[in-house]
Image (cartoon, rainbow, N blue to C red):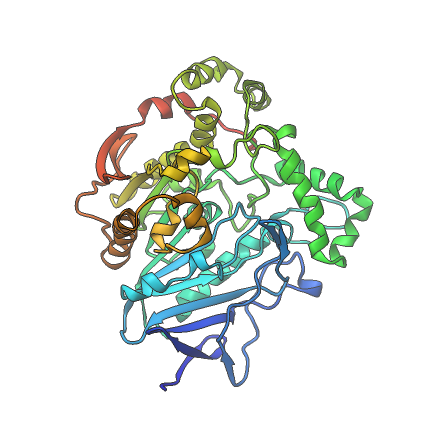
Length: 490
């Protein structure tokens, strides 16, 4: 059997042949963020002697995921999957989602076999989530030496590591596409605004991102105060952050999950903050040209809000009372009558429509409009397939429902949930269309000749459905109603 050894900037790594590809898994790209490095930004790993056996995925980050406490602080690894042969391969880098709170690169949904089969060099990596990655304690007494944006620093370091080593694995440094969904899609948008990754990629795909999930240091305290409450701590207890088992912090984090909407309706869970790594809100930076020269696909799903709006423990406002409080608390009271009028009536739940627009569709259009000012190569899509299961559960075309088609994962548990009762033929059709457009974009820079470029609120949009098509959607009224209203930005 051939031996696959690659020299990287961190040391030599050994890959393993599996099912017609070569996997290099669990390669450390950063020093372990443990001990004194907890709540510190990531730094490059000390190069090792000898050969690192890249045989298995690394630890997931610490998190509470689907009822399971899991993960480890020592989690900062990168994975590479490549075809057996080929040089100057186009590159696809996946950033997982999970609200900045859950997620890991070894999730079977996110492995890259389908992309490798299609002649693409596939990368993924872990970054720190929730408390260790995106809670900002820097304004609290005794935490002045903590860093902000630890998880963001992981993403920046990983992308720089990939850019520095892409040729060693047979990739083309001039054809690197970064992509992600949910917080991964938001991370893609953030990377379009971060100076620290300039030149690390040439194309980007942002699926169902939350571009406004960015806070100031002061706004971040709104959620951190809830964390303290959930831990039954006062500020005097913050020293325990340095020494306590980080899995215990998840108690406070789950309290934040449960309470944050009722304290501040419409506020996002902890994510990146404005600092030297992300000096400006991404939408504002993109409008000024920070993404110039980067080709972009961006879009959302028609019923994103069904995953988040609930009668209890809701993730976004679930009543006119909450929406009113959200609007008034952010000094947008003059806009309230028009917003209520816009979302009243219609067949769909107004609160699901409101949350879908507020968190996903409206800011995605703003990103596309900002990028298109400096770059003609912008495309928008909307996923609209409502399956039998989507009708039965009420989730319709919800958040993340396109992922099984992007990665061609018919047997993943999530696929069974969202696709139950549908035919194999429909799955193959949707995968051929969505995965096929992504592959074409990665390889050629154009996703589909039938998919017109985006320019303004009234533009061609690729509609993924039982009959996939390109339609000219007019979202002028949506954008007029929301205007430049801002929420929780101070």
